[in-house]
Structures are given as C-alpha cells and as structure tokens.
Length: 240
Image (cartoon, rainbow, N blue to C red):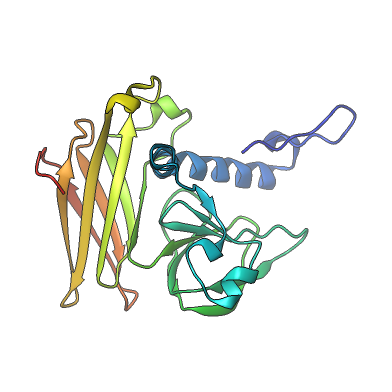
C-alpha cells in the first residue's frame, strides 16, 4: 500500500502535497482500514486452501473480453477493482462481465451506490473517488475505520451486498498473531442473504466468532433499491 520514493526525488508522503491531496489521501487510507476485515478474511481463506487472492477476470469469467482485460482485478470472492491510473485522468472505460454494484468511495462511508449493467462503460470519476465493484450475489464485510489495525472494532461489522437472489459469505478471523489457525484456532461466521418477493431475509447459519456481536446490513437488490437493517449475532454451533 506504500508509495515509495528515493533520496533526491520529490517527496510522495500524503503530507507532501497541498491540503486537497492530503485530505484525499487521508480518506483513501481510512477506506483501506475499513476494508481490513474483508482483505484479511479473503487472504487467510486463500492461505488455508492454497487459493488465489488477486485474480484476473479470466479466472472467473470465460468470455473473450474478460481474457483481454489487464487493468481490472478481482480481489477475493466479492470485489473487483478498476483504478484510474493515467495521469490527469477524470474517468476510464471498464468492462463488466456481469452486473455489479459500484461504490464510488470518496471516504470510508457508504454513500453513492449504483448498479452498473454487464458490458463496456465509460465512467467519469472525480479525483477523490475510488470505484469499488461488488459482484452480483456477493457480500462485502467492512468495519468502521481506525488509526491502527489493533484499534479496529471487530465486534460490529458493516456488510454491503448486491443480492439478486441469494448470497452467502464465510467471514474468517483469527488472533492475527500466532499460527494457531493451522490447528483450527480460527473463527468463522456464515452469513446468508436471500432476496425473494422484493424483500431480503438474512440469517447467520453458522458462527464460532465470540467477538462479533452486531452486523449493519446495507443491501441492494436487482432493482437498485437500498435496504438497511441491524442484525444482532447469537452464538450457534449449527453446522453450515
């Protein structure tokens, strides 16, 4: 995540620019910390299964265009990223092999959400906007931001989802320090969301995480309608 520089070159730390850029960089760093629960969960699931954490589109989609795109990336099971990386760019073309939910993140707060349909699109993006794409029938767990990983409140999660019929997410966590996970020292929470008859039903079908207490759900259905609700976690030993 670091932006490297060298001696006798221009400084690139967030505070080396003007106030506007410093503010934007601060918000991007806050967004990164809010994404830690998802990034860690997906990374460790890849470690445990010898799976792939970052993937080109062609690992999931077999159409011709997905095999040609080289500047978009799947991160874990739920997320696709398509950054604006050209100097002075104010947007970019993207290709979506399926409908996805775009979160134009200017901060870590979830505000502007929009369904982008399958196909090729040009997206105008302001300098402070980071486009994140949640895949169809996928869930994205995040947290409130923090100044340090140890300060992240993992007792309460925010789960953003784009659900057209059914989505299931296995949220993984461990102590973050030891290798106890190799002997089963980790926790899983399985969250299932069903969209039926124009409404969402959410259940926790399996949970061994004694830290997690509450989930704030932000769900978007096939019509783009946004629904929010709180889910209080009850411990269960029922297998998934």
